[in-house]
Structure formats: C-alpha cells, structure tokens
Image 1 (tube, rainbow, N blue to C red):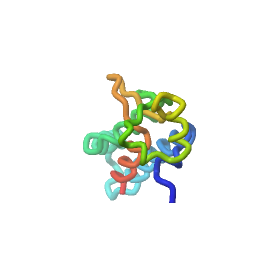
Image 2 (image 1 turned 90 degrees about the vertical axis):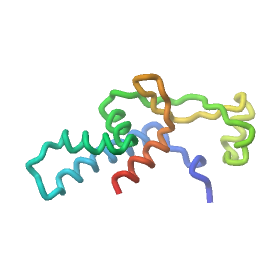
Image 3 (image 1 turned 120 degrees about the horizontal axis):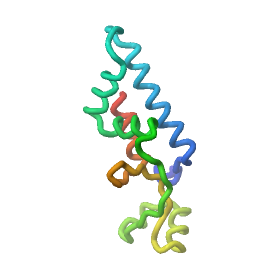
Length: 123
C-alpha cells in the first residue's frame, strides 16, 4: 500500500476537494433544526473552532493562495518518501514539489494536511 504522500493531489483536485468541503459546511447549515439562523454566522462559528476549516473557507474565497513549491526533505525523512519523490529529491537538491497554502502573512501549510483537518472537523 502506498503512503499518503505517494498519491499527491494535483492542484485541480485539491481545489475540487476544497470546494466540496466548503459546500458541505453549507449543507450542514441547511440540515440544522433552526433554519432561520444566518449561514455566515454559522460558517464563522465553524471557522473559529476549526482552523483547518477557516483556511479552506479562505482558500475557496480567494483570500489565500494555493501554490506549488519546492520543499526540502530532511535526510532523516528520506525513508518516508515514495520512489518517485525520492528520485526527484536526488536531482533537485533534496527538495520535492508540494502544494502549499500561502496565508496573508506569508505562512505556509501543506494543503493535504489542511484538507484532512477540515474533513475531520466536519465529521
């Protein structure tokens, strides 16, 4: 079985997953027993409790950016790399390409970790 890094999402698939998470939050709002509440307040409440959801909401709204960038892999973590990433890192100065979310402050997060956290928050 391949590890999670071997089956990396493309930019297009990562954005699709982000949009699906965003839409699912709206479905949760619609399924609530108190339909008269404000959807924006509901989403703000979710975002305040779950940072991963806040990041996904920001990504879908265009307030943060999704980029592909080279990320250095420490030699101690080489055993965790799939064959493809291992070969790429050998020829690219111990770096591999990763999809990262760039926040307004310049901070960077791995999109796969953020999506996993957001999905977990919705469960």
